Length: 140
Figure 1 (cartoon, rainbow, N blue to C red):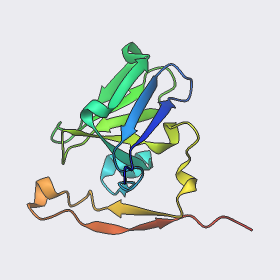
Figure 2: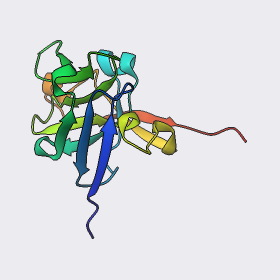
Figure 3: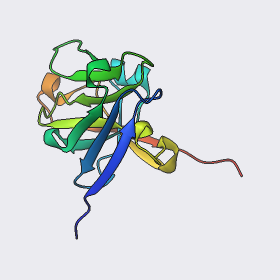
Figure 4: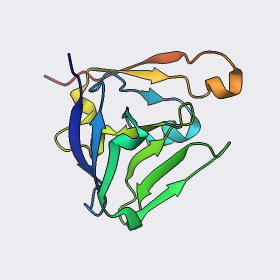
């Protein structure tokens, strides 16, 4: 069965537009507890590095690196929205902000696994671990 999904995405103001192919659909959806992800609050899904294509606004993208400088977080310099990042634990993958994907909301997912980014495998030498699960329960 092919779970490949091709989606269009954009930042809030629409300056940055992209297309991403998700080889496993939304199977890799997650949040993270590292200091940056915790403050940013985004729900992300993984894509291979060659699977994200910037269609417009590449010149408006700016990036931020911290700590080891390995991960590179991209955001629109006009509206400030984080669109994607090159992952620290796997540089051949990007994390894509699901809120930037057309027709997708972080609240579409009843449960989102939360990775323990505070104790990142690159720092501890231990395997990645799940810190918990974020649940969305809509009001009735």
